[in-house]
Amino acid sequence: MATLHILSHSPFTDSRLASCLRLLGAGDALLLTGDAVYALQPGTTNLQALQLMPASVALYALDEDLAARALQAPERAQVVDYPEFVELCTRYAKVNSWL
Amino acid sequence: MKFAIALFAAPHQPASRRALRFAQATLAGGHEIVRLFFYQDGVHSASSNVVSPQDELDLPREWREFVTANGLDSVLCIAAALRRGVLNAEEAQRYARSAANLEAPWELSGLGQLHEAAQQADRLVCFGGQ
Image (tube, rainbow over all chains, first blue to last red; front, side):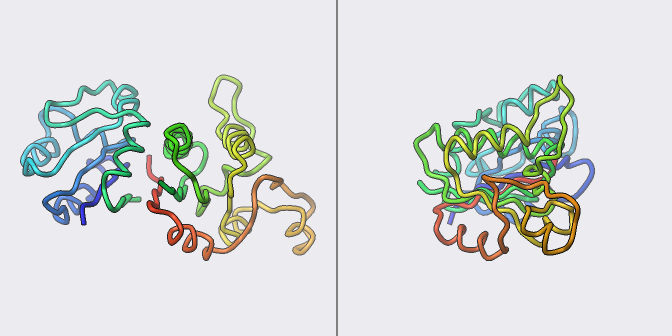
């Protein structure tokens, strides 16, 4: 069952992102919100790890959280707003927040 | 689609704003919210005593207006609320405290309400973190 994983902590302060990457299934997706968007910081191993995910795993980032941190989404990530966030939750069978 | 939304973060944390914006987008998108559940530090979002600086977003007020305007079922975990000093008039009287800071539309109830909401909803979406 495809799961949407929602991350909201910086990957530079804990291992949630690393744990999540280990658990991802083939059709799962990752949504970066809050400080988790720092994973898209250019030139970091976190971004490299995300770039290495198989193409079947979709990667999303919340637009206002990127804007608040002056970050640009790389090509690999799709930027979503709140209506699209809601739509993503309906598209995946499960929603798992890494609190 | 039916949503249950749980908030674990305090009103001064970004996750509280995210949960509110998500909840607003859920209704705007034609979906239903079966219950909002406030747990852990999320219970502070319901306190009537929070005073936000004038030039900052007043999240407790926004939550209250959103819940009232849409007639939503909004529950605080009673154990989480009591230990953080968020009491309605009934609990203030029960524990002989001098003041209450929780009014309508909020309700105090048990964690079972989160479980029930998760069963009733198609999706449970939890908010916490930074």
